[in-house]
Image (spheres, helix red, strand yellow):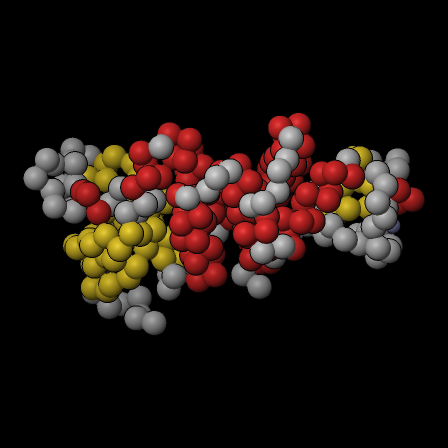
Length: 253
Ligand SMILES: [Zn+2]
């Protein structure tokens, strides 16, 4: 790995997000396999004559030349590897792609490499581009991200007693990161009932290959329940993360 002191370096990256800076510049948040997340500046990129602009769109997989800078490293060259154009042209897919980036952004620290999450994001973009069911691809991505980040919910055994979960109404605890059997979940202040069908769907997505997952035919109601449980759990983890330094250490396991 090149040392922090080298003046110029090359890396592959995915553009997670960007914002305007000054008259004609943009600050990009990039995610790289070697350095993790990093904010860099693309100077003059909003000028119509910029040759770099087309390579620095959101979600683009790009090969970058960077020079060390004071506040931000500076993009000196950019070449598209994969444009993922469809993710920018289809509004529905754009919303999902932004969400994938935001979720990753929220779970990783700057300069903390997670090559497996980098591969996951690229894979998620490839799958999203051709997905017959982007919502299902979204749920797969959420569970895969949690798995890689060390926060996969326990869905097969009670998080209190370790007993195998039976096909009845069980309970889910955000705090304890998984399912509780009826004996330990009923009346627990941190747990709420999880419908059997929601649990089955989550287990399937967590444990089966992607092409099998995509064959699932869920009713809109089931999909909403799965989406809500995942959304609530992710919000809980991210809120706690803001409060707890320990969370950050765990992520670096
Ligand atoms: Zn139990």
